[in-house]
Structure formats: structure tokens, C-alpha cells
Length: 446
Image (cartoon, rainbow, N blue to C red; front, side, top):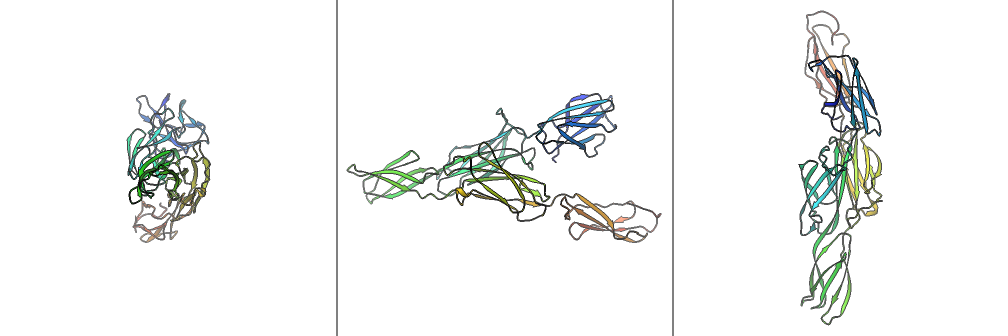
């Protein structure tokens, strides 16, 4: 659970004060604290209060004297939580909105429709906005992905606003670029947050060579726009400058000779297949504990750069589990990924849109790491240790999945004797020598 800043809630009651976040709280849970103050306002020790919540479950939190802390976990679908603390005849109450905020992510390019062969990059602006259009700076920096080209140099330029460079692909054929942004909330590892996508038709500036009757005039029309005419040279060749948008593989036009005769022509531009799928995964690093989750979002586009509302995208994880998809009003698809309980080095999530062609696929790596220590056992190689001798202390650390937790930090101390250096072998098992002094009383020790 992320660390949260505790601030004074707006409601005071008698000598009790309820402390908690002053921003929307995450659905996974948040921490509140109860403090009792004396007449001078100084915190004092007090009996444990009774803390309840409407729309949430409450359990005691870690010790933080003189505060009494509690973990509040909102119930499913709860949008508001009211926490009540009672003790010593006093009461404190506070209300918390459950996030994530109803924000959206808006993407824009300048120039809006860059052209290959003329432009090499464009400025990408990403804004996180509240429903009323004001900036929302509560989320993490956006994770960005492009179906083609690159996004570089993301910078925070203002409240809820980020700017980056979109570098056009070096290929010279027209295609549609899909840019996807996901701003996690309230922290970068969260599966909550706002997202958005931008479909960008990348036209290509090309000089089309051809041959015809010397002196004739050639013109072509693509996507309703006319190019030319240009005159055919004495050697029978011509070069016609075109701006070819994606998704228009055929150019139609005419050749008019010197006598005024007109011939209708059609030219296959031989455009290659393009990628119509872009997916973003966040977070991209999880503990292999069987419960940690990530969010997968996929956006689709037809060859012309228009959204597809009913794209049948398939996804598959090599080891973990996927649930979904859910489709939003704009046709974006969302899955929830759950990490496996086994630590593996080759986890990948593959997404494909077969109907769009073999190029419409994504392969996203997921780095799995071992989770934190959840269970520790301590034992001695001998149940009875004599004074003036040495025994081995054995510590076994395990993670949430019950697997040995390698490279755990182990610190040993004892009021009797000394403990030598800790040695790890095998992984997750730590051994140290305990030297018991010759002098001293018999008995038990820790």
C-alpha cells in the first residue's frame, strides 16, 4: 500500500482528532490515525478508541504512539467512506471520497497530422483533465506507447500536463499511428487511473515516377485530392509529387495527350500492410505472488486511422492470468493481469488482431520479481547450548507464495553472547554462529 500524507480532517470532536488523507483515497485501502490532545494541544496517551466506517472495513494499523492507526479498506463499488472514532466520551468523524477521480487523458499533436518525408517529429501533449476540463495533477506520469514511431523526452510542464516528442517512423509508406497514454493513480504501480488514445493518419510525401507519351499531361486523385497535372518529358518519363494518406492503395487519374485525348488510369500504389494495434501495460514489474496485478489497455485503428468499435483482439500471458476484455465507449479494450505464484524470467503478454493482418500484434514483457518476506522461522541447531560453546542460528525467510526469499535482510541480536556474520546458503536460509560466554547464569534467552 502506498504511503499517504496524513493531514488534519476538517471535523473535530472534543479531545479526539481524526487524521487522514485530504485527497480521494485508493480502493485498495488507506490509513487513518486517531490522536488525543490535552488542553494545550499536545498529543497524549489514551485508551484504544473504537473506530468504525460506513462503506468500508477497518482493522488496526501499525504502532505509532501516541497515535492510534487504522487501515480502512473500502468495500466494492463504494464511492464514499465515513470513518467514526469514539473514545473517552468523545467522537471524531471524517468523510473520504474513494478514487480514482473521474478524470480523462487527452492527447494532441503539433502538427496534428505530420507527413512522412516532410516532418521527422511532432510535439505530443498529454493532459489529465477533470470532468469540468480543469487540470488534474493527482495521477502518476503517463506511460506512453506508439504502434509505430517513438515517444521520447517526456516532461512535466504544468498541472496535469506533459509534453514529449513523437518521432515519426523512418519508413516511407503511409500508415496510421496509434498513441496510447495511461496515467496510473494514485501511484505509478496502481491498476487504477485515467487513459486516452490518439489516432494519427501519417501520410507520406512521395514523388511518383511513371512513363507515358512525351508532352502528355498526367494528373492523379487520392482520397478526393487532385495532384498535378505534370507534363511528360521528351524521354517519356514523368515525376508526380503526391501526398499519400494511409488506407488509400489506389490512385485514379487521367493522361491527356497533346491532341486533347483523355485516358483514364488507375495506379496500384502497392502499400504494405500496417499495424492497427497498440497496447500499454502498467505496471511492467510485479512480484510473483499470485495476487499482484497489472492493467493492459489496447487501442485499434483501421488502415485509414479511424477507430474500430468491435475489433476482436486476443491476448495471452505465458504464465500469469488475464481477465477481460472490457470495452469502453471509444472501443478501447482493457484486461486485468494477475502475476503467477512461480518466479519465471520469460513472462510475456502477447496481443493480436488477426482480422487486421499479421502486423497487428504486440508482445509486452512483464518483469517478475520475488515478493517481500512474509514468514520467518528461527531455530537452533541444538536445543540446549552450553556456556562457553557455539551454536548455529538458522533463519528461514519465505515470501507470500511460501517460496524461500533469497537476499532478504537479516539482522540478529541477543542479550547473551555474540552473533557472528550471517551467511546465506541455500537461498532463503541464513545461518550465523552464536557464541555463548563461559560466565553467567543458566536459563532461557532470546
